[in-house]
Length: 387
Picture 1 (cartoon, rainbow, N blue to C red):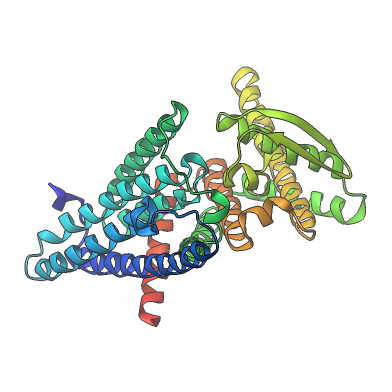
Picture 2 (tube, rainbow, N blue to C red; picture 1 turned 30 degrees about the vertical axis):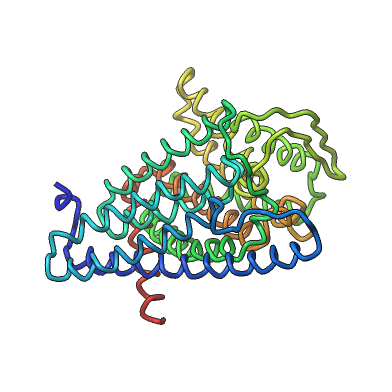
């Protein structure tokens, strides 16, 4: 029964209203974008003989119209759920999973893996955790992953829309910028959760103290000695290459030097472009090497040195990433400053949120995720009170 997923009926009723309000906001912005695009197309039609179908007859416009229609139905159902509480969890369940299917349709029609509308999956998953229980969020994540895999498979076998909207055009849409703004409460929730995790892990002297000592050692080296830029640039470009391979692409050219570097690839998306800024390659290598060594030679007696190296490697990543961000980076400008800042912050925070519990064994990952969902919900609730 769906009622078993619900923690509190009142929370679900309030959550339905939040979901409807969020969808109305998205639909309003979507329709605004449609009107702007229509006016631009009308002006172009006056100077050229090439006519395109109206935007409301193309996939992104159709999705926006469907969202508006569903929102009206949800409002009517939400009014009924106030007098019939058992209807509330079913309505929330329907909204969340209908949205996941709509997002999948939008992703398929806007570039597949390269579509930046993939971030909308995250909003549906977070909504499931906040409004319903965490096991519904896990189910939502599984459904989203399955549908996204189907979209990727369709592209790989050549089943693609007749006319795919170019990713460069999507980056300029105010709807997408608005979606990026919606991730800011998730960032705030992650920051609050990181504070909770660090307080919970504070008594782990054999882990946190060596990690902080290693970070302090690297900061002293960073401030007093020449910066090892070749090592950083090599790791930066290698991270690009690793994530290209992870997404099934190929690296055609690789260059790294103290002056800079670049890779030429046959596939790109925002994960590939921003990976070096949020994925600490050298810290991950330290963890992987220790895991293998501990499995073969039982390196438990070297745990303190391992934590020291992890702290130094992560501090290396943070300090030199901050250093290169002082100059204009094509990876950042290609994705937009707002989205890049959100992705880099979330990526680095997630590394700490996952890494600290694993290293200290003081907090399990499920508890950490629960804190994150609760803190994000609290931030959204406070923002809702403000407006």
